[in-house]
Length: 389
Image (cartoon, rainbow, N blue to C red; front, side, top):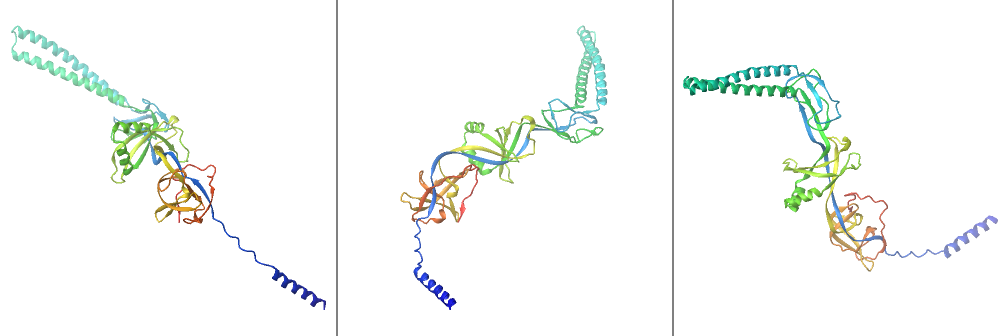
């Protein structure tokens, strides 16, 4: 009986409780909240970047100019050498003997020349006194000229022998870093055996860059006046970003542009030079070269996050003075770090939606709050692309 009473009380409690409870009315949603920022106008430098290969300012291929056996290698491979430093030596003995022989021949023929000149003087005197015939006089003149020519040839042979002896000492033609040797002591070398080593002048060092043909045409058209072009080229300052991402401490200068466009790649080569104290940089390294090529005056800028792309067209959401959203098509320009230039479609001071653009509809009200850029936002060229819809 007691159990039935408890069950009845519980049943009544559930019935009354259900009757008294009401579902709360659903809250009316307000305008969506978005984060906005004003369109700013600013002078922005345009920075371009290219892949580069480092190369020696001079790469001197060292070869033997005379044939002979190497008797010494006089430098340490991979180290710095000075112009005139001895790199290799060829056995000089055959060339010393050739020089002695050339000098002996010259001495003999010089004596013959002196005698012939004395005979010439004597024969001329006799001819003037009508003692000898004209034929005898002419023979003396010819003998003297022949002796003179022979002596000149002998002097040239002596100089050639001296030069060949000098060539047995193979020296560095420039200051630079000497590479590994391709011949060993005892090898027979000569003009036909190819390079013995290479000395690269690396201070300064060249950064070799290839740019597109279209880029070159735009540059050449903009600076068609040669004086203005040279002045602009002198004003350029280059940065070198190494393979590990570090920025090289020394700034570079424009050096030269090639005479032709590569027909296979449609690119043209230009070079910048960088100081290289301590020979830190070496030929063959890959790096990136960047430079500020111009300054865009009064560019209209908004964060890249505010730009959306739809089927190849770009648009932004603008919050009007009455807190309504307006979806506008825009024409975009260059990117400057995290910012994007707007060529057409916006005015300076207008507020664009940076975050929450997916919540807005054209002409619909919104609740706008200021957007604060993240702390330490890196200014990297071409950092973030447009959002895709």
